[in-house]
Figure 1 (cartoon, rainbow over the protein chains, first blue to last red):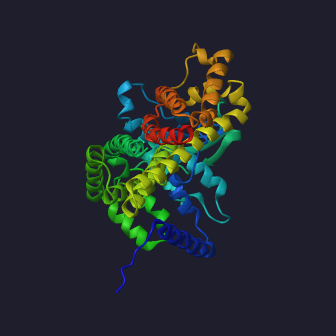
Figure 2 (cartoon, chains in turn red, orange; figure 1 turned 45 degrees about the vertical axis):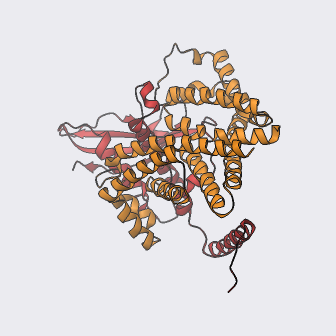
Figure 3 (cartoon, rainbow over the protein chains, first blue to last red; figure 1 turned 180 degrees about the vertical axis):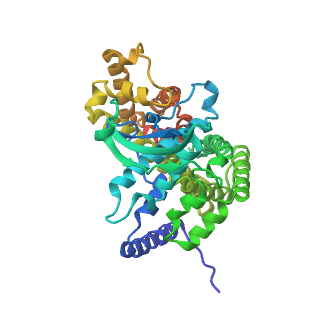
Length: 174
Length: 266
């Protein structure tokens, strides 16, 4: 029986035809945007701090037992600068990732298909949990809370009448 | 040339190992966020996989606290082996696949651009290992380093080009506003970056340096100079924006830039 031998060229030709088949199959089915989103680390993104634009910011407020609402408090990732963070900066990176989640919620609102509610997306319950677990004060002086999302120009202050793109229902403390 | 290629390939592995080691230690620290009560709990994030039941089941299993913990520990050990002994095909494939799982677990990216560059360097190493296994190690690293260099050089050039096309970057308006809204903000009212001339000078320095990447690829000394300034640049980005992972992600692509420069420059 003759021994089979493959060269690099054979391998590359094989990969080429495999990608053609994949393109044909995926072209028929249509690659869902969810999968593109989950694999976006493979898609080059070179626009770091590229231009000033609209920034989505998350705001939270609480209602006390006298049914008085507090002012809106903005969530903004902040940290203290340390040289050691060059090698370990987990908490600040997480805070930035939470802000990315908020930005994703803003994108989801814009891209929401007709007839679907924002609560049905993956991002909304994650943001609600972010508010519940990290943004509310631990004391017992309040019973309800609410969050909202405002989209406004970098460097400006939010105008809640003009810039609000999402207002959650009044939520009960768990 | 063979020695240089293999040396630069090995250097890429060492820098990548350091990068992945830091990332993995951070992920280990952040397990609460991906745990059952965390914001990234699979009970919430699993909705992304509803169209693929088998992947949903696989990711559900991998996302269990204990499994995820052991996966990260295994990855930690793989990083150490990569640093000390160099990569083998199974080791590189494990790091690549587990890295893919982790970024998908964080809904596609945990730290934006650094995830992209880490995956680009990982892909270059996979390419080097696969071709090295099939043909020769040198040919493998040539292909891998070219792939990494294309990604790295393009990242700088496009990033600089996009800033160049932005009027707010050219007139220095963008920089203080990004710093003000950044993780170490708000910027003090007395900060020199609020002064137009300072902000404009710094902005133009960034733009020109990023756009100068084609010149860096013409000769090895140019590339070495570009990479040295690059370390300073990423150091500043870390200092002002807290982006520590960017330093190591791009550092691991620098041997590839030097390789291209040595090929072009002779």
